[in-house]
Amino acid sequence: MAAHVGLLFTHDLGNHLPVFLALVAVAFVGLFTGERLLHGIQPSVGQSIVVVAVCLRLLMVLLPPTLSEDVFRYLWDGRVLQAGFNPYELPPEAPQLAPLRDELWHGLPHRDVPTVYPPLAEAVFAMAAWMPAPVYALKAILATVDVGTCVLLLLLARRWQMPQERVLWYAWNPLVTVELAGMGHIDGLGVALVVLTTLLLTLPGRRIGTAAVAAAAAVLTKLVPILAFPTWGRQSGRAATFVLLAAAVALAGLLPMIATTDGAPPGLVRYGVSWEFNGPLFEPLWRLLDSVGLPATAHAGLDRLKDVSGEHDFWNRFYPWNYPQIWAKVLLAAGLTVSMLWAWKDRDTPRSMQKIFGAVIIFSATVYPWYAIWVLPWAALRRSPAWLMLTALLFLSYIPQFAAVTLFPWIHALIWIPFLVVLVLTRRWSMP
Image (cartoon, rainbow, N blue to C red; front, side):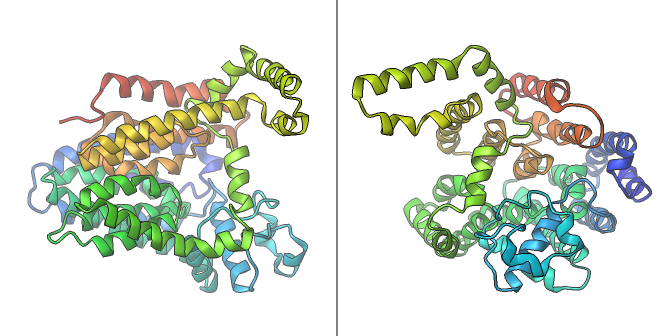
């Protein structure tokens, strides 16, 4: 907790990174201590967790978003929508958007890429862009939603008869408070909807319709929750009904985005093909594939197929995709598919959810620190040592952004080797 208070005096976290990282380490020690203290004050554990969670988020909302520029892109998208333009078609540098340019535009990252965010997220951005002090308005909205997530997790812990004090691993976690209330990442809304869906399916009467709408809303915030549909379907007791209803609502919400871009939005395609940052398996894998000459072997294979088939035009289209990063993504996609099948078979809902969102991180080519928030509710409730440790280690990925240090191999190793070792040693991914 002292770490969160100290952050207010650093203001620009990037320019005070050593102090910031030291305070994060202190905060995680405080989490261990807090869990022990709360264990002895039943039944007021939940109230204590929520009160402290509110205070931490109030402090973080006051911070300028200096670790990430995403919030500025959010507000730009909102402004584009308000002006009647389509952010899925027009990147910020599009000439049609020139009248909207100001200081916000000059600070935008990736001005050549159209938006990648689904419609519900865009609607929230537009609402925040309309408000006074839009940066802090959006952060306040997300902080409020995140307090709701803490309450929902306490209710889930009660429903599943888990120790409520474990919720503090989410509610007081520096990764959550800094990245959601501090930096204003929209992931907080998606996580809240995922937790809400799961809770609704535990209540008497299994509110399948409401839960399906909540699940669809999570997908309309960020697409990744669609992977949880099979688990939610089994939890509902009427899998086909739930999945079909949730998919129909999600598709209805996505149709405007799909229709205006004639398929997959170009920004989303660009993200899937080109975005690469701190993937735990991706970074070493593509270098390994390059070193063993897989692209050269594939190139020779394509040449042979052209000679045998005579279909030169057909096979020529594959040459631009023959490079090690794409091969690594193909292999990781196969690994993710197998992991999803393993996760969906697990009938323990919190463990299945942890496996789903955990596998997305492990097999992803891009892992920013706030991505771990998706797995954290389930890791907190199950007290998973590897994933809880990762929420601290991921702050190290900010070092290359503010210092003359490359991410790979040393910073990458400092983050992922301890995590993978603990994950393997604790095979059930949780502690009693």
